[in-house]
Length: 66
Image 1 (cartoon, rainbow, N blue to C red):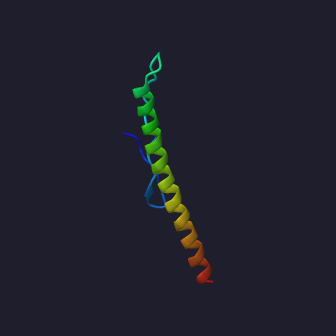
Image 2: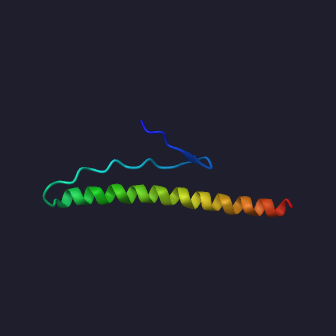
Image 3: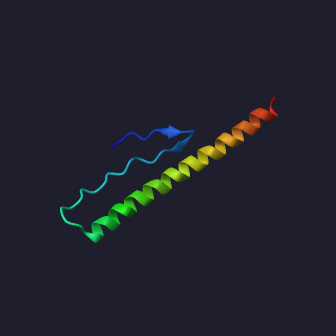
């Protein structure tokens, strides 16, 4: 099992194991690949936005405490 690093207490999604491409084009295989990548990037986007919000909040708190 892969070790998933944490970034500001938010779990970073593990890199997906991409399916092996077939020799000939297969629409179902392509759809599966697209879905795997879509889910990964949605998870990654969530982590980035949460951390961006945390960073903005921390900056405001630091500014207020000065």
